[in-house]
Picture 1 (tube, rainbow, N blue to C red):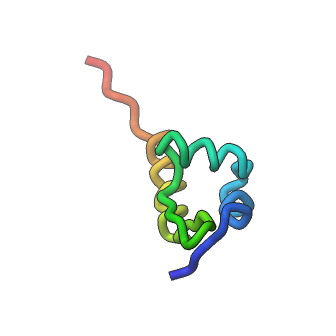
Picture 2: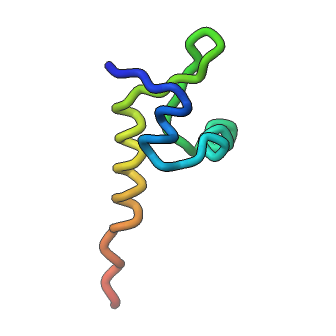
Amino acid sequence: MKLLNLDETAAMTRVPAATLRYYRHAGTGPQSFKLGRRVMYREEDVQAWMQAAYEADHRDPEPAA
């Protein structure tokens, strides 16, 4: 299990750290947790979040009736 801090997660996702902080507050970003005073992300959780975003954007449109 590889752990990432906020800056590493921002670099991996190309999402600004401030946006990741907002996502954490809103509960919409990758799953995170506190380890002491630091916010950490598991690499696999970040990858799953990015994959879910990709799949949501690439869904097949509903067939026309």
